[in-house]
Structures are given as C-alpha cells and as structure tokens.
Amino acid sequence: MGGAQLERPSGARPGVCVRRSFRAHAGDQPRRPPGPIPVPGTMKQESAASNTPPASQSSTPSAQFPRNDGDPQALWIFGYGSLVWRPDFAYSDSRVGFVRGYSRRFWQGDTFHRGSDKMPGRVVTLLEDHEGCTWGVAYQVQGEQVSEALKYLNVREAVLGGYDTKEVTFYPQDSPDQPLKALAYVATPQNPGYLGPAPEEAIATQILACRGFSGHNLEYLLRLADFMQLCGPQAQDEHLAAIVDAVGTMLPCFCPTEQALALV
Image 1 (cartoon, rainbow, N blue to C red):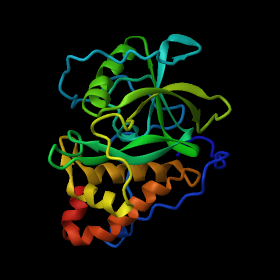
Image 2: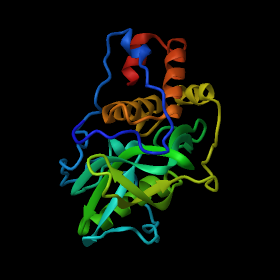
Image 3: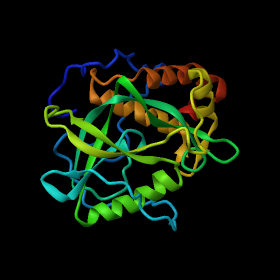
C-alpha cells in the first residue's frame, strides 16, 4: 500500500494475522477487490459507479456534518465496511487510515445487501471502545458531490441498513498528525436489525448461509479481510481475523472447494 507506514496506534490492541488456509490449499492467493483500491492521498474518483439501491422517500440525514476546515463545501465520509471497496458515489479524494476509540464488529443484521428477511446476513458496525482502533477509508466529497453522496448513502446505509450518523476523528495513514473530522454510519442497538454479539463460530455459520442483492455474505467478509491485509501489519482486527479463521474451518463442510472459491 502506498503512503508511510505507521507504528501501531497508541492504545490499539495487538491483533491476529488473518489466515486464508481455505484459499491457500487451492492455490488461490488473496486478491484485491475488483476496481482500484484507494491509495493514500493519490486516488481520484470523478463519477459514481452503477447499481444504486432503490430510491427512497426519506430525506438525507439531518445531522450537523463535519466539514473540511479549508473548504466549507467539502465533507469527509469514513467507510469501514463495504464502503472500503465499493463506495458507489462520486468523490474527489480518498485516504486510508484509522479512527481511535472504536472496534469493528459483525453485530448488525442485513436483510437486503447480504441477507434476506428470513435469513439476515451479518455486516459490521462500530462499537465504542476506548482501546479500539478501526482501519478504513475516508472519502472527500466537494460541492455538488456532497448532497448526492448523502442522498445515496441515506438509502444505502440508513434506510436499507439501519445505520445512524456519527462524527469521528480520522487519522490518515500518510499524515496521522493531521487528523480530519469525518462522517461515519454506525448501527446502534436501537435499530431493529441489530443482532448483537455472538460466538465467532456462530457468526461464521450465519455468514456462510446468507446471500442478498449485493452478493454472498462470505464475499463481504473476505473483501474486508483483503482490505486489511493491504493496509499492512499495523492494521489489526482480532474479531475479523477470528471469523475468517472460523469460516476457513467450516467452509469444506458447507460446499466443495470449487463451489466455495466461486463464492469469493
């Protein structure tokens, strides 16, 4: 990954390296998600991708969004789940980095993107944790991009996902001494789709069984794990690594290797 490498942020807990034994035995190497991966301070995106979720009558969130100090028409949006590989909105800049005081957890149910009403999938949210550190991507939107991005994300994250907005402090990987205020979408226990904690094996079983309009829940898990590997050894997520390992143990029992690899 481009950009300066950081020491593990102060207060962040040591993690476990993500293992891919269930891929490696078939000769499949960890791969980048389709499309460009944001590189700190270099990647530009001028047009939004397709596959926009259905339109909604809901208005954009009414929170006071954090604006870029140098441009009142600019906004940073922090992604830590599917937004790291599929933002699907137009943006002017992107930076890889982290937020402190939060841990990522597969505690939110998903009945649209990665699951159904009968079989909700598991996707991530942020849990307040004073020792936590969560890596992701911050996207800068400017001018007309701001309203368009918020309108789109209101449908994708709030209406279909059950997420609320929260202001976080984002530390870019290449300039951690210049933090940014960013908007993040966080699923709290108050939303009806919240599933809460469960053993890693139970979460892995649920992920292996679920699929939604955006694809299989397993794809979501592995793309997120791929992103974390690309961030480097300082990017740790014990919870994510434990679920990936549990999936690696269970996957041959669910389907043959050829079918398993087709899912990812």
